[in-house]
Image (cartoon, rainbow, N blue to C red; front, side):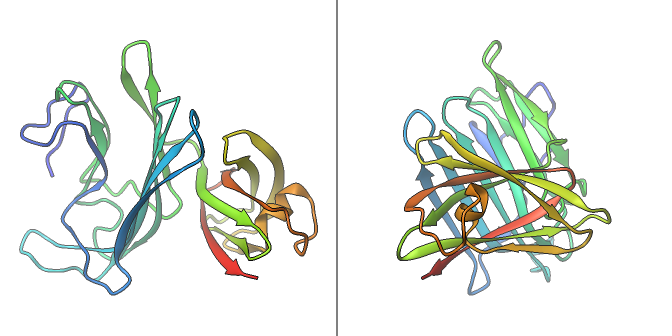
Amino acid sequence: PRQGSASGTTGSLSPNLFAPFFDDLILQRQDSNVSARVLGTAPDRRWVIDWQNFSLIDENGVVLDGRVSFQAIFFEGSNDIAFQYKTLEGPRSYGESATVGLQNAARTVAAQFSFNQARLYPGRVVVFRFNPNNATYDVSASEVKQYIPSVTDTERFRTNLGLTNISAVQTQATLTLYAASGSAIASRTAVVPAGGLLQLNNVVSFIRGLSPTQTNNLSGSIVITASQPLVAFATQIDN
């Protein structure tokens, strides 16, 4: 990886570059995979690319003992881009040899969050907010948010949500449920103890203030805003 300047130009790197974890990665584990999907309906769709359980390779070609999992989410309408990090384990997993940022098609404008710096951690979200006035991106790393692109509650399936507080203090998390169309349905606040785990059975019903056994017959997404960094993980359960 090469360091780019704030004004752009990253040498021979590809144009239209988005780099949530630009380093030498390898699909080595049996559970390693990369997937992509479009969620929602126009004009509020989200394109989600998901990297799961990748290993890193050092400059000598040695596979390091660790794994990284992260997502890139592209928001239609606002043109915002979010990178969010779930599992970061082992040497260099916090970005010590990686570049995190964006570059435009002409290689004249770039937005860089980090270069060879350990600025990542599980639960971190880096948001690149598009400025339509000059077609540039502003980096916002102070927002403590998690995006759960897909949740559902039907007769057949439900989504459970786990929230892990990686900080040393209690955190308050606001969960907002959005319909597939992008409109907000409901919000609810939950408290996660310091260093603790909160498990929400049927998170759709939880946010709507209903019994976890009640079927909502809807699918959508969740945005979690917290006062401290959280690691959020969703699991689809067969009823």
